[in-house]
Length: 181
Figure 1 (cartoon, rainbow, N blue to C red):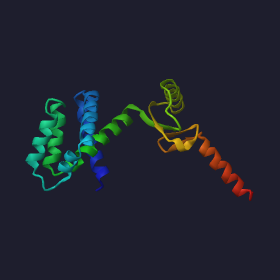
Figure 2 (cartoon, rainbow, N blue to C red):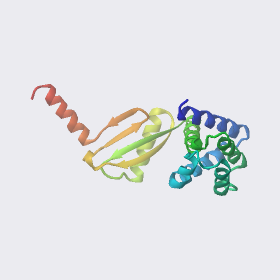
Figure 3 (cartoon, rainbow, N blue to C red):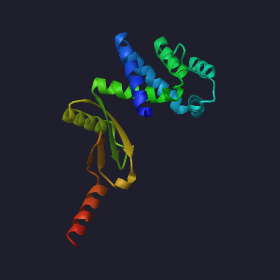
Figure 4 (cartoon, rainbow, N blue to C red):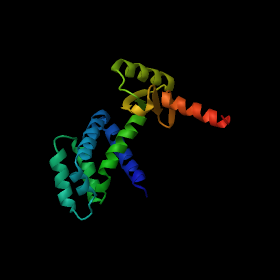
C-alpha cells in the first residue's frame, strides 16, 4: 500500500477522533506545529525514517518534542503509529491531516506567480475574486518568477490561468508557427 494511502487512513482516523472530542480546530493547529518542527529538522526526519533506531528512542524523542505542546490524544496517536512500526509516516500523516481538514472545511489553496511581489491589497482582491468564483475559502500564496516579465499566473488545484506577458508571447509565437510565418 502506498505511503499516501496509509497516511491518509491515519489522518482520517485522527480527524474522526478530533471531531468526536470537539477539538478539530486545536488539533489542526497542533498538526501545523508538528509539520513545521519535522520539516525544519533533517535529524528528526532521519530518526523517524530509520528502521534501525529503536522504538523506545523514537517515543522518547516525540515525547520530548511534543509533550505539553499537543493534546495528549495526538501524542498517543503518534505513539501508536511508532509502536506499529510506522514512524516514517508521522510527517506524512500530519500533512495529510491538514489537507483533509481543509477539504472538510471547504478551504482551497491557490498560488499566484508574478514577476514581482504583489501588494497585500492586490493579493486580497485576487483572493476574494477567486473565492467568489469557486465558492470556497481560499488561502492564496504569492510566488515570484521574474521570467514572467509581467502579469501573473494563478493556479487553483489543477486549473491554471496564465495572464503573464511571457505566456502571451509564447501563445503568439505558437500562432505564428502554426500559420507558417
